[in-house]
Image 1 (cartoon, one colour):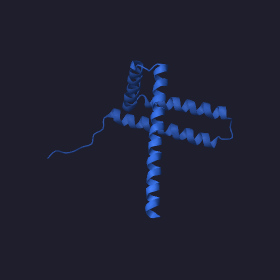
Image 2 (cartoon, rainbow, N blue to C red):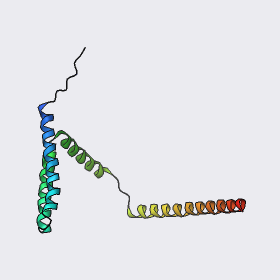
Image 3 (tube, helix red, strand yellow):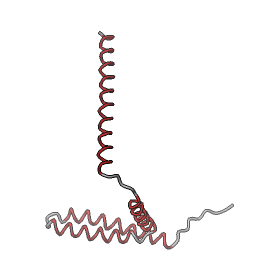
Image 4 (cartoon, rainbow, N blue to C red):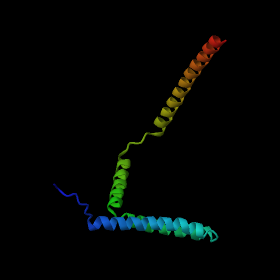
Length: 124
């Protein structure tokens, strides 16, 4: 029989503490914005931005924060690899989509009108 013990590493405990600090900073920013609503908007925005920067910096030091940062960096690299369509290609594709939407809306309108006519003749 094996014992199932839940041992947390010191880094995971530290990560949890960092996330508690991040949540406290966000909650403090929300509460402070409400509490100091009579202060100037500039001061409140400046305080919220500073708290958000500190919260992001703390969150970036956690395992999940580092993984998220890595994901964002890889996504930026992938976006640079994308071959974006030219303006004429975009315009042509847009007109094709609009034409198909018009055709299908006319087809649905005709089906709806035909079914409405059939139902009204059957019901009387």
